[in-house]
Image (cartoon, helix red, strand yellow):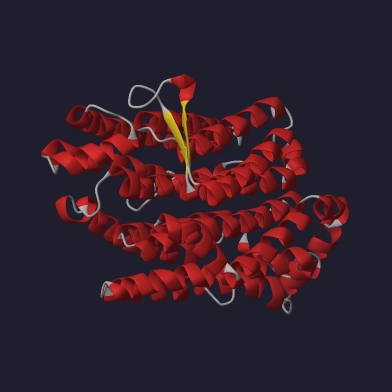
Length: 462
């Protein structure tokens, strides 16, 4: 907790310094680039760093008692892996070196695989699939970096951008771009490279899922966006290599596939896993449109989705710790005994749909405006349709929580809920409930004051 709190505080100090004095560039070990590794803290990396560390801090605090119950024999291993995971993710965010990004990507991935394994036999199978596909993704990314290196003679992002601006397009650079985005697409869980994600989120310990679901794939999405703005020349990934079109197409497919499969799920964690695939599709569309407004929408949605998904998974973890069930039918009548938690849950749920004034509405709104500016009317329909599809499975949940109480099955379930409420209630009030309220208030506050984030942080950089 102390280490993550310190990292979070330093992330905020770094963001404040960047906003007041401009970006920070640091040559590791005194070796100047292109020979050495460079770390860069600019508006965007500082912004994403704040998101990653803050969400991690809140989740780790909220799930302390759940971790003790789920992973009682491996607590030291768990927290060591958590710190490795966060070191990898924050390293990805601040590095200015293509190969160093791969190193941090593997550090974070290896820690994530191991954290998933802690869930038992079924989790080991899910984690093994995650490991195999994640290793393929890392290999594709590394192969792409090799093509870029052999074409430019450097791994520093700024140098690569400068050299590519000078020498123009080449087939090897185009091949490198394709491999890099294929690898990052797999790490991000972009359809059809998403097969590892639902089982990993569902079978992992609930405390692990609450940590990796909000931030793991968002950092991969950030890496994609970083390639557009810091590595490849403006327009290269649109005109020379159709990466932008690919992201728009696969993102749109992900929105539909993720939402439709989520509607059919009865397990809450699996439902939210497929929901993540849908929401990641929206982020991919924002990156693929490749305009300043669409990049702003993508970055806002990275933050908004991290907050919303952390809140939703924490609620599921709390329900599972109290009632030993994550099934939709087990929620009947639960709103009466978990009032504050379910109010916070409802705020995150309507933000997922995109109802104003929540944060989720504004990132979708800016994405829709970006699509209109480019006359991408099919994309606009997909964005609007995503809200309707999300509403279907979200309202199924809210109906069970707040409405269904009449039939005999519900009464029996309510008696079961009342009998199990007990001591877990006190632990929740001390740990999870304050965090849920903080996240819920943040969703409303970010929605109302989103223009401050845009005008002061994102717009100057994009």
